[in-house]
Image 1 (cartoon, rainbow, N blue to C red):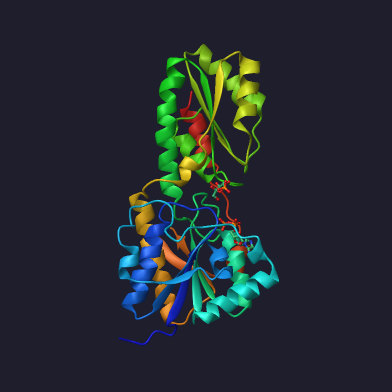
Image 2: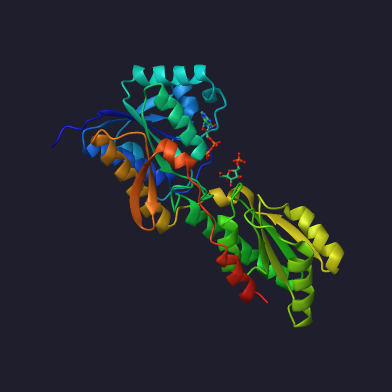
Length: 325
Ligand code: ADP
Ligand code: F6P
């Protein structure tokens, strides 16, 4: 077997967890061990680098996790790591364990951390893990599919009670400043209107008038989806009830969207990403973000990846608007 260019790597999950992170951890550990690379699990994101919560991982460290949500390495948001002193301490702890490079599974905040760490001469490879799908360089992020499937299961349940009471349900979904979860979920549940941060919604024209019109032509209940970055469900439900007289309820789906067994798509994506991360490291390639371009894997320099922009396909809302009457 060819000698790997890098022989000891660290592995962490950072930022909000996402279903499929465990499958990615498993892929990194098992691929690395197959190439004679030692893996050190760093607990609680960058916090574990600061507190030296670092342990070697083995083949059986990642048994029975491919189907589990969450992350066995735990995750955190670490303000201390954002200071230069924090980054120096983190890098010193990596060196103490002989860690030559770190695999960071997380969102673009975590990639900024990875850039800072590489400035302290601990290079990184980043894997996109977030339910929000808001990482510009990639078409897909680990956890996105599971989160949307969880959301539609919850909203299908809500529909039953919304329909029985002939009410309006305003459902707030996650996504931070992006509307990917909302736009797709809205189409999938037949929402009357979907509000996303990428597009201004005229409440009177697009929601109130449409509700009044569709009620006249026989519509009995209404589902409105709101991305958390676009509006607050409670405020919108109140405005709708005040302006239409139709009883309205707000439901914030919240963190249930981040849990549960990853879907097939997330397990496959996570396994491919983790495998590719180690392939690059074994060849001595670092400071890259691995990304999906359609179904293919590509990789970008971390700084270039952070400077990219991506835009949501607004035609999803157009289709939804036509179909939901
Ligand atoms: P995500 O990775 O999901 O986007 P965050 O934005 O919360 O999540 O970032 C996760 C962690 O990455 C932060 O808590 C911090 O430790 C680190 N981080 C984020 N931004 C920076 C930065 N500009 N410099 C250094 N570290 C950062
Ligand atoms: O980035 C994932 C995410 O779940 C976002 O959708 C949401 O805005 C945020 O994290 C919530 O963060 P916290 O877990 O800190 O409440």
